[in-house]
Every structure is written in C-alpha cells, then in structure tokens.
Image (tube, rainbow, N blue to C red):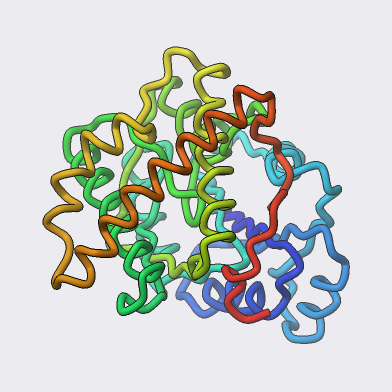
Length: 301
C-alpha cells in the first residue's frame, strides 16, 4: 500500500495540480492520496474537481505541519515495511515517474528513505530565478556525491518517501524532512537519492519572501543540534561554504549571472546572521505551517 500525503495551505488550484500529477501516473500498487490542509475550502474545491475515491482529505488542526503529519503517521501505520509513505507539498508537482522510481528504490531492503530532485520553474534570466537554479543545482551536487559515497544526507521536503512500519511519530521543533531522515539513518537504514525523479518548485521572487523563507529554514535546521547533538549536519553555514563555494564560482554563464552571484553571497551571509540573531533572542523556529507567508511562492492561487 502506498500513502501519498500532500500538505497544503489554502492553495486549492495548485493543490489540484499536485494531486493530478500523482493520479496521472501509472501506479500498479494500491494507493491513496491524502491532502492535509487547515482550510475546509480546499477540500470543497478538490471534491468538485476530482471524483476519485483514492483521494481523501485530512483537516489540519492548525498546530503545525509536523503535528499534523504525526497524527497521520499514527493513523496509517502499518507493520508491513514494504508499504510506503510519500510526502510532498500542495504548491509543487512531480514528474510522471515519481511513484514507480520510488517503489523501485525500496526494493532494496536496506533503503529507508528516498528523495527526489527539486527543479526550479523560475526563469534563470532574473536575479531571484538565477538564485533558485544555483541553490537547487548546488544541493543536487551535494546529494549526488553523498549518495554515491553512502553517507548521510537530508531528504528534500518537497518530495521524499519513507518505509511505513519504522516510525510512528517524530519530534517537533525542526524541519520534518531532516528529522525523519535522521531517525531512519539512526535505525540503520540508507537514504537514496533518486535524481531521475523531479519535483517542480516555484520560488520567491522578491527580497521579503526570499528572506523570510530562508531564515525560517535556517532556524529549523539549527534546532536539529538541540534535538540530535550527534546528527551529521549537511545543511549549515560552514558546509555551505565548504561544499558550495567552488561550485558556485563555476556556475555563472555570463557576467550578469556572476554579478547576481555576488549579491547572493551577501544575501546568504545576511540571512545566517539574522537567523542566529533571532535564535539568540529566543525567536526560535516554530512548527507553524507557513508561519510567515510567502505569497510569491504560490504558483496558481
């Protein structure tokens, strides 16, 4: 059995596209899609547009994305470790081979988590669009390298899958993709990067939204040190320099992109300093689903 969980936040049109990107795939195994959203209007819209018993709805109680996922993990828990849980978001959509490639990866019993490759749908001809391509290309490079070496790396929250029957819940207070990845790694499972599976992402295109999204993400990862002191860190300020500096210098195709790259260096430095300042001021990461909204990332709604 495959459970596909799509977490959304009042984005009915985008969520419809996300659901259809799974329904349109050739899935031989039994599956169910569960949309998690705190707005009943999303359910009403989806029920009008989709007449398929394989699509269900779970009303998010509003205590945060991880809180809602914990409830669902307990409800769909199965002792059969061949069952799979796929997690994605309502504001993205996936390539047509996603489920089949994930299912193929789990045929190796030592694999506990599988993650896909985020792809920016933004134009590379704008500054924020270029930043999104560079950052996604950078994390792709890191995941590919760590995957080949059999080392720990964190799954992408945009699209990843786990074996059912391994964990019933997970701690709150940090990014769920990182927490879940580590829990499986600690139990002896391997993480696999299916870089032929793509998930298409709309990124922020203004400074306010970009800053808010990145600062919240940094705070979510910094909390991992408190939850799991022995967790290998793949996303940190120093790792970003170590793994990304040379790669980023080789990335620009022209003078304008190199100019935008210099802007990105200062922007990344600023958001790290700002995130660390907020952590010091006890403005830590909270498990509120989109605590600070980023309107420019809404692709259709």
